[in-house]
Length: 197
View: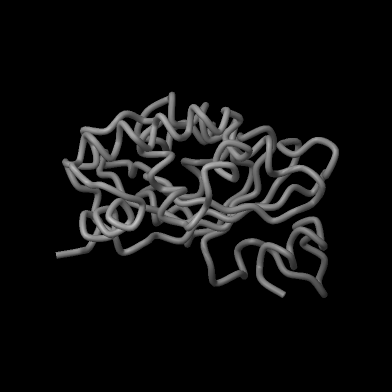
């Protein structure tokens, strides 16, 4: 059982025989309607803040652009219900305005109202944010990230609430923009662009 499952089942309780966020050795945050209600030092330090500075702050502070915050919320809302653990990879922003890739996993504590109360685990990915990737549109970056996770056009369409045909169009424009001919080359390009070095 991972930290997300443990805390989701315990409701982030601070009873003596249960864990609190502060005791967990991974970056965790408890949010209500995407407002940070509690986070541990490990989480706050990733972003260059103290836990007190993030208390009662909207998650949008941690995104490069407000549009990224909105789009991610839409994507999670369609996949987050029913008590499932959901994850994605995304670019986040630190207090010093530097950006970094992060793997985010989360689970709602209220299956019928996904954002009412949820626990998230953030894990930085050792992958550079490259200027070439930044020339793509926000939607192209989102689709590219999901393609790199091995998802099909149909799966991506379902996940982000667009038609399969629209996803195919985004992929085609992305491939043309970066000069690759097929999905394998697209994933290889994504991997090479995001290598640290």
